[in-house]
Every structure is written in C-alpha cells, then in structure tokens.
Length: 219
Image 1 (cartoon, rainbow, N blue to C red):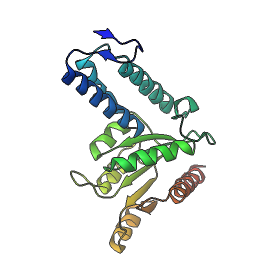
Image 2: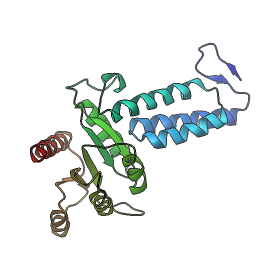
Image 3: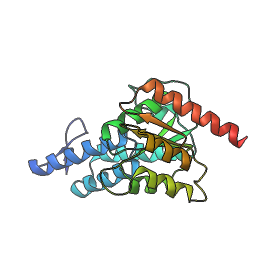
Image 4: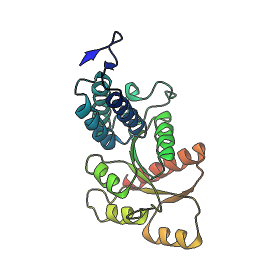
C-alpha cells in the first residue's frame, strides 16, 4: 500500500475498496461522536480488514482507547473533548445515554461534554449492557421504548437486579409521557421523565439535580 503526499490517504488502486474504507471510517467517526465506543471499535475492525495500514483509522482507535481510559477513571480531560465543544467546568461524573435515535445520541453526547460530563452512548438494550460491563456511570438516561427488542423498563429492571449497578439513578426520555407511564415509573422508582424534543437547559438541569439528590442520599 502506498501513501499519498499528505500522508493521510492511501493510494488505493481499487476505487471500490477505497470507497468502502472511507465509508466505514466515516461511520466509525460518527459512532465516536455518539460516544458509542464499542461500536466504533467494531467498525474500525472492518476498516483494518480492508486496509491494515490506514493511518487515520489507527489514530481514531488511539483516540477511542484514550477516551475510554479517561472515562474508566471517571476523568473527563479536556484533551478528549472535540475542539468545537465549549470547554466548560470539568466534572468527574459519567453519564450513559441509551437511545435508538442516533441524532439524539450525538446531541446528548455533545451536550454532556459541553457541560463537562463524561459521556457513553448506546443504541439498544444489548449495547447498553455491553457498555455497563465496562463502565460504571453515575447516571443512566434511557428512552422508554425501543422499536425492537427489550424496552427501557427492561433495562431499568436489569440494572436494579444487578448488585453492582442497582444504585445508579435513572432518567427517562419519552416522546409522550402518559399517566400510566408516570404511575409505572414512579412505582418502580424512576427518578424523572424528560419529554422529547429535548431542551438542552432542561436536560442538564434534570441531570445535575438528579446527581445532587443521589449525592445527598449516599452521604
């Protein structure tokens, strides 16, 4: 494989192969912005299968590993926050966001980073469980209903029956909050519902208040 003069793009003889490399690389970058680190690494595996020497993929993998390492230590070093995001007050709380809408995951990850939180994203129940096997978030924000598979309440109950995770507070995202939904949520102990479309200031106020209540409860 030969590299171009700018040392960033391989000179691939097969245009179709090159297009596939660029496609999967762009997808991995999108997943990284959503804070879906496991999914981003899996996508980079495909890139490496197509071109094992593709340097942008190696750099992105290094960024993912550094970010995950920082989050595992409950650190949100500004070095790992995208340049276009405002560098606000740094915090050491980690928030897991679970939503099948990738636009919401991107927005929530960016907003959390903007306010100094660490962010981890997941697009399904299964991906959330995989993330929770690695990270111990201080708060989980999940949509109520997924189109396929287990719903948000199933994730809540799974967490509550896990000895290491059961104390993590929960916020729910919902397009519409019905009386029945509120009753079911309150009976189970859900901390709060946030209605879509999301208002950044309202979401962050809910996040900060929920974490403050949790700190007082633990103290």
